[in-house]
Amino acid sequence: MKIPVIRQLFQNSTPEKLEATLEVLEAFCEFRGVSEEEVNVAGEMITNICGALEVHAEVNGGALEKDALNAFAQRVMGSIDR
Image (cartoon, rainbow, N blue to C red; front, side, top):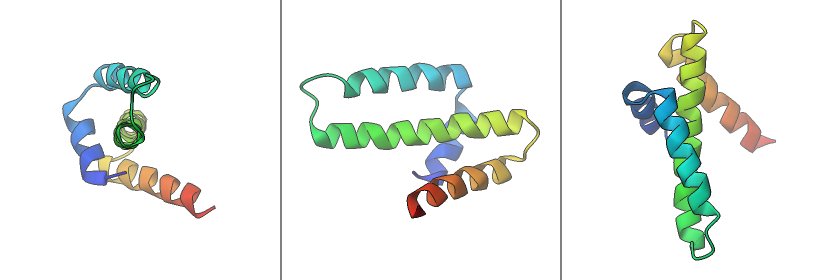
């Protein structure tokens, strides 16, 4: 998870484009010939896209971009600490 990447995705992509990209990456990870390294890279991209989608949802709900980004980061870090 990289907050600058999530911010860039949020600012430059619509939720619809992010959802379409997410579907492609998830399908890619299911191919037989995909290496573990490729799955790890795709997984990092999926995490960043999901973060951008959550930021879109929070901003549409009235949150400030900065607050939405920080809230997502805290949720991810909190789930790792458990």
